[in-house]
Length: 256
Length: 197
Image 1 (cartoon, rainbow over the protein chains, first blue to last red):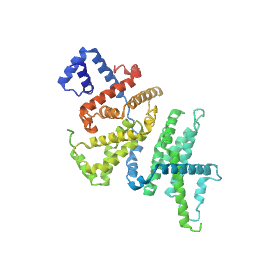
Image 2: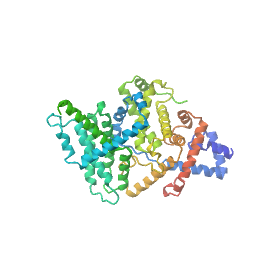
Image 3: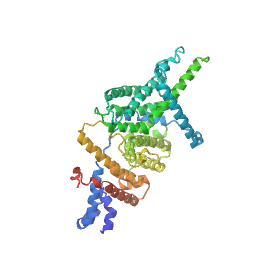
Image 4: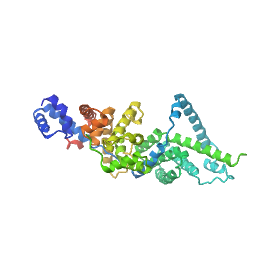
């Protein structure tokens, strides 16, 4: 065996895929050639280091909801609709969503009154059941939104004094998320259900933050919220729910 | 030639091919961890790994009627996973494509561990080094390396999954290991490695 032949079988040798006869020839060359021996040793050390990669399990909650989340993606998307969407339409839609989001945030946080109370007050006489899935989802999203906004406002210069209450709230919301997903099984709630599922994972992250003020961990969570566009999705779902409530109001009382 | 499917697998496949909902769920339950962790090795983060693994099942459901059962179901799913990953990489749709973004923004951070802060920091640093080294590989190199090193597929099995010649797989793997070696060169003198050297 020469050095070129050695190189062509070194991978097989590293993974013990040589037959005994080939292995013997390989070992003889390695013993007599310092260069090839060095190549083999270095590659072997590299593989040892790579074997230390850890595979963390995402946890029982994640696996429990895996099929349910997959099911939501099984609903067919009509190809003709997909083909009709042009890039400029998406840009216009994104602009409109951003404007509406700004409007909604302004109205909810800087306008008069408690938005949660207003939501219930809108149709007191139409006997809209207060405990509908939509209402509970609205409450869940509002509380999650406040929690996430509080987390996002944290920065390295600010002492974090609310980590315990944040974890408590996260735990409460995780419990709600579980039952809420069960209630939102109908197709019209598909996106809402997906959002609740995404929020559940983020809430788990928050609930698992260490007691001390671990800003790196918090940055990881913020990164996840940012990458998944969670706050934007919350706003969109809030608008959808608001629209549904208005439609129900109109149906119940056409004179409004 | 790959080993043929066992009876139980064959029976499950037939039920999935008949679109029986419980069978679809059973199929997912059986393979979800295997496919998720392969996707996690390939994409490097939890969010993309979940998306990728779910795309794999959707593609598998669409294609299962054409699957003749001439390879193991797991090998077939591996093939779909790697091909979907390579397609997505071509479209650059994964979040991890941002240059220099650390790849450990996943459930490494979610897991609760009982280690001390020092060992935890050390562990995280090593994981980050390994992730960055993996990220230095081309998509094809990473696919071959992950299948061989973490999924323990033989070279000929990888050749079958990726539909490449065994010689090509070997050559890609050789280059991948050399590249990892280069990426980990700063780690050579790490105290934990003496035993390996």
